[in-house]
Length: 491
Image (cartoon, rainbow, N blue to C red; front, side, top):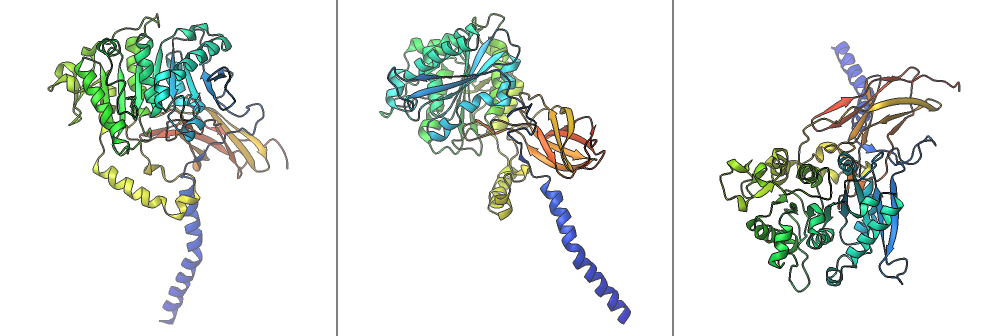
């Protein structure tokens, strides 16, 4: 009996001693799965501040008036894909109202996912930084056209500075959030023959303080001119600006759809005034529309052939090719192809499990561990629109000695339209040592962070360690070829 008791006591003692070790190992294993931020600066001087920042950014400032002071200027940043001799078009991402939107406005040009889209079609990408309120977000701004004139002057200056004179003539894709959506629609009204497509994220009806909407009250001739330009309205299900950003877009959509416009409207589930996951619908939508409208002569825009698209029921979210649609086509959203239609369906829909998960994650964020770490578990933030493909595998992986028991792992990655710059996992000898969050986006869809470097500093490196890097999304991962670290310096 005494011997048995001693063995039990010994077992309990060993368990007590081992528990901290087990907890520590489990904690460490959990920590390496939490996505951390990629660095914004490289440890290697030759790389500079941004692995992706090549010599293809151009910036200019345009004053509101000839006598404007430093606060009354609009700034513009243009990104042009490398090795593009002649641009075929321009993507304009116009921020909304307020200081936070203004602060990150120029960064829209640094968005790697939108850059991938621009590069595919040999387009330039433009970010703006307009003064807060005027000339974007007042009744006066909606009447005097200052923001429009500044934009056109900016294009002329950027065409000269970038040595791309065609920038003054190429067609536009207009994307706007909130007050930026109002500006996009006003530009469509004034330049219908130069606009390929428009994406209005939350609002876009140009609602004046009098209660009148410029777009809802257009003359018949203007309606006829702009109805041939595809427009995607993206509202938020829980947007507090119900009248201006939910009801008004719905009325405008209904009026123009009845007039034969190839337009679509979507209501993002579990979203308010933030841009949310709209890019996951907007980019494939624009990709399909652009392929239909822009020919070898970019300035000669082609008409949309609506019969080749798909339709989405606004009530049931059922989708079908135009020829097979059962309801009234002029009450349905028009979408350019099956892929976009299925993503539109996902954008509009939220299942019961998602609602439970979202509530659980909001509770989890209040726990101290979620406050201590910059990013909570990635499962708390799944994409509304599921990707169709895994990201490509990282390439050119290298592990270079940067200190005693320290190696810096670097790699290359080609951002794509669907994944942008995804998250990465770094493995040493087959074991996960770090998870790094890719480029995300903020409230207004500006990239977050704007500048990144694909590097990881391993401070526990071993001689002849073997490194691999994987890129992953919600459906899988792609792993690089392994690379071996060899110490060159004796410490």
